[in-house]
Length: 108
Image 1 (spheres, rainbow, N blue to C red):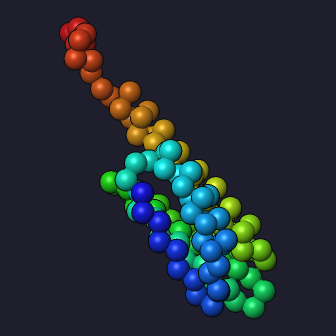
Image 2: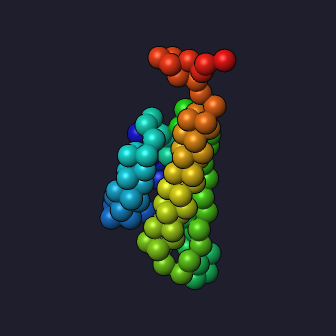
């Protein structure tokens, strides 16, 4: 899993970078071979965390804004995790409903 962290108008300290990488590293349990791009930005008193995750198929994106940088990172990770879980369960449900068994073909 590759994680790129970019800061715009935000000083990226090693603590912030490691915090973002730690939180986003948990998404690796949901999907393999993820490419994750994180953009942290600040405007006045608001911090925005934008995350784009690309696996083998569908790209996932989330953007969250709050008054605390760490809180916006947490919220963005939660949104991404929810999107990935929803997509995976939908794909599994489609596979289960429409698939024929190789061992026991449907009797006509």
